Image (cartoon, rainbow, N blue to C red):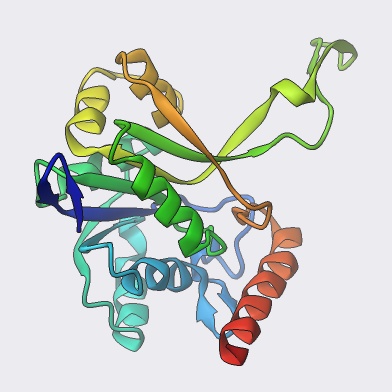
Length: 242
């Protein structure tokens, strides 16, 4: 819970695990269930917010056909702040919409977190939350570190962009509850994924940016697993030595 404009407001983390992970499944199970350092990836994400005193509740967005497997894993790792489990949509913004609709408060903040990114640090989350007390929308980001270009249909180079001017968003994104609800209500029918920061900006709200450390990394393919495991293992060792 935070104080904003002199009043205490609740904070809910909406954790998105509704994707099928088609690019990276093991024995037909989506990547959020793959174990790293002894726990499924999505459990690591839940525990980030379970262990943060600023966060009041958690909403988990799932792939409905795997609900029994979610329930099985959640029994092993009790998460008292987990208040709602809802089904995801076909597109990311639909999953966000379902998660936001399940939030119990009309005022306060909503954090959007990808459930296959267990490396978002509490420090980055706190920075985003603190910034969200003065801005309606906040996103963590990291600078682009590869050359970014536009290609032609025949796979030839068209245009190279100045990477010093480019960045990409990472977790978390933090929104005033009324702002994200407004932005999502104006989407309508869409047959493609729509970035939430884009929807919020198009709704007329300024999005403030917080620089994240480079270890803030979403798991997309099998090559990411070793890196993320190393990050989490190092953090555990540092914590144990404090």
